[in-house]
Length: 381
Image (cartoon, rainbow, N blue to C red; front, side):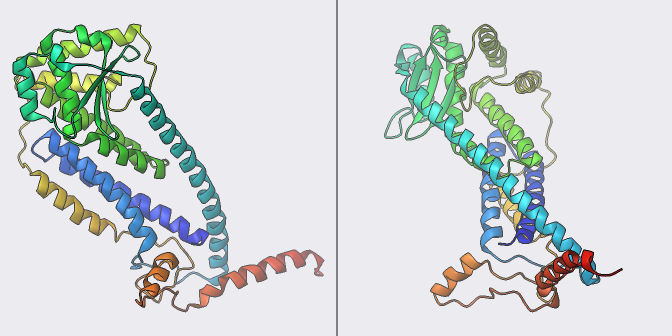
């Protein structure tokens, strides 16, 4: 892949990513529940990773070519600029991606080491039999993938994780809570696991590593994190009367966190971020007052996911004609060499070369212009 092709790839993918995120956010406002909305973000992150594979392994459309009417001299100038910009962009992107990946791996190792330092706790000592039966009906508390409850004194806010097995880590001071408040916490964390939020967070981190430069990615991360907490808040409280007690539970954790320092960066924490807590409190208050907004249109999870996939197929055709060296004589680019070579090995013939175009000799022209510029000071005036 040349530097001009890489520049076109980054620009086009950035636009496609923005389109998919906007559509996901719009569809999320039309779905039936926050749980479905949260799962829609999981589909979104999977689609974003798929778009990268499609862009790198498959040809892309060329419906527009604005460079046809430009003179060769102007083309050579644009090519020089694009080649330099493409090289700089590649090394900047690669450096940021490596740094982001190192941070991601380091945090995962720290969380894994932190989990090994926690102690198991017998949840039956802190919940009534009625509550245990209720949780067993709604969540997986037994069997091969049994949820493991851990505790530690090095933590402020409870959180959950899922590596080989699903975990819920409870700070020791929360074990002294009354059963009703403790029940809220367990319901909240179990909903994270049931809805597949650890997988969503993993996909989100991968997307953030690759598109670390894209502001829409970080905006989507904030929106999906808020949606995850909304879904778990809905699962934690079963009646409007429980909302007051639930908010008091969150307030207690916040007050404790104001006096103690958290020693580890934990994913899917129950309480994290002042703006997020304020948004959750406002929403729960509106629900308690029966002021929730009625949706004029309500989509099911399947309808929303299918709509998102169809919209992504259209977004994949959005390819900006940035590369000046692209041939205007073909409506599709050649197959990338790595995927074309693989298909050739299986006897499949694909178009893996650029259709002839006089501008493809622009490299010779650039070399000629460079030689002429070097020789020009010695020419008589």
